[in-house]
Image (cartoon, rainbow, N blue to C red; front, side, top):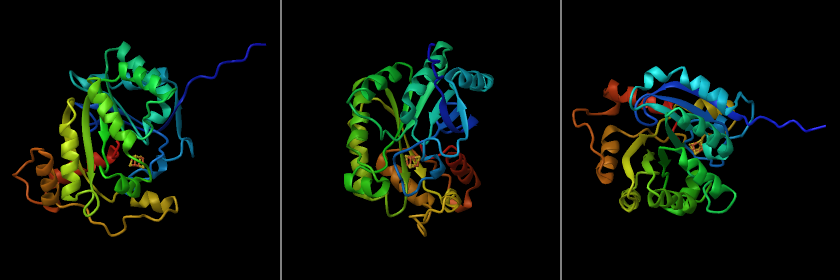
Length: 278
Ligand code: SF4
């Protein structure tokens, strides 16, 4: 009797069909389940376990069929983004899904914290395979200082910085993101260090500040977890613009403050709806 081969399924936390901030143009976004980081500001702690109370399972073929329903929105520059949680934890599924997308000439974006990256096998070979079908990598650099990175996320960052260098060396387009938490990730020296690192890369086409917000706090409470950043305020527009200045990001000078600016608030909300990862 032959053993039946199990289908490759992805553990999916949620789908977003009209994402506007996680990659170029309009995106179909797949948020995969599972993450080894424990960022103190995590907006989606319910994604941490791989299966948990799952939720939804899709084969790569099922997911591409679902995504293609929204193709008319994508026009010339939209496409598919896979985020999380941490999508690289389901790299086999991701390879198969992006392969299906590229067969159909769909733009693919990987939104990652970089935490699983290693040059050791079998991960490295799979990662190189994945990059054949990945057009853009959006990478969160949460802290440059290793000790502070560990304090914020519970994990080291040497492999994450190595991933950024590797992608730059191999010519992969990168967007770099930083969640700006007042008093934690906005120190001047830290931001200057981030700027120096970004300048050392040759394929970064965009750098973004994601203002910290507290919309995910209720999820921590639902999971009976203490929220570690209790009392930490969201950054003001002036704080965001100061960070943008240090990082050399142009900003809109017509706006005054986050709390008085509905457009800015709407942008914040969209960013948060789309998750910090990623
Ligand atoms: S913010 Fe992203 S990388 Fe950090 S714990 Fe949450 S899902 Fe993981």
